[in-house]
Image 1 (cartoon, rainbow, N blue to C red):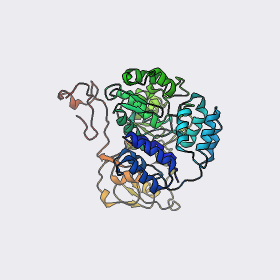
Image 2: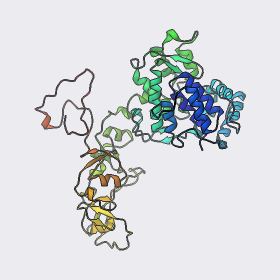
Image 3: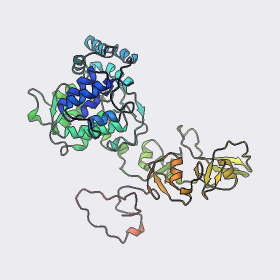
Length: 465
């Protein structure tokens, strides 16, 4: 089961400083669930509520709704990481913390202040990060840190809904005028007015944790650190003898992209693509949100076409030899389409013997059920969805799935394990250009925008606006 130490990051979600301190002390010194919950209630002076960011963090944990009841033997890889320490102090502290005794509150505080931000300990810290949160390929479906979406070739340590919510919670805490660090509180101006997008990139980077070569995913580059503190740090309240440069020397001591996160990369969408949905279907069978995103992952213009893949008929035109029938067989290929073809169809002899094909019910567009796909195509029918026919889906009512594909009915979407976004065909959503392609709009004068800086868009439930 999960160790309470692994939930320490949740303490930073607490809005009250005393609650944050109490939370960290409790998770480092207690092991039983009832002790932890009672201690948090007493230390934070309030009952647990699901909308409270602190308790929400515990509740949204994928492995346990609360800090766990028992402590398992810590994994040996963390102890092996301790051997990568370059100083005796950090090596001893690391070994003490990740041994069976789990160390003490004082040991954790010493580790944070003496080792957590030391450049010489990057090997040990990166190793611990790799064990705790291994790098994973791709990032998508974030609702707050949207500039991190659509990056299928990038690596991230923590691209999930919990970290996405954590970044939003961090921004709310920072809006109060202070960024709490283990060694000091950094006073800041109103970040809602002073470079909010850059602060958002900081919060999201520290939560989503991009894997940049040897970076452990929690250190932004020094030039970014100095720049944002010079402009948005409340320097009149800085501790005596400190400046943006001295603070960043400790927090972000390098500009080497191998060891830090460059914020510029996450101030916009990948390849500076506009935040819009005008889907294209690539030859690898995958639908991309826009042509820009498709080019961003390395596809050439002749390797994709506009429209979602599900809307394409792979058998039109028919590329099968004479005497064979073309059957749609849509798929997504992970290999390079430069080296291997990714046909979305298969050619079968006429007639096909379907007796040896296993029973796997499918429903055609006339709401007639067939034992398997082979017999459906043998009878000259078209597939509506996999599974038994449902009366509720007899009249076709198109729906738009969360993947941007249009399905003939709710049943078709569910058979593909896709949630329904809204009723009707999927519509392209994006910034309205000055030269529209819809002739119906030529004679329409849109009202002026309500405020300067607004960008008109096409909503998903209407063809024009």
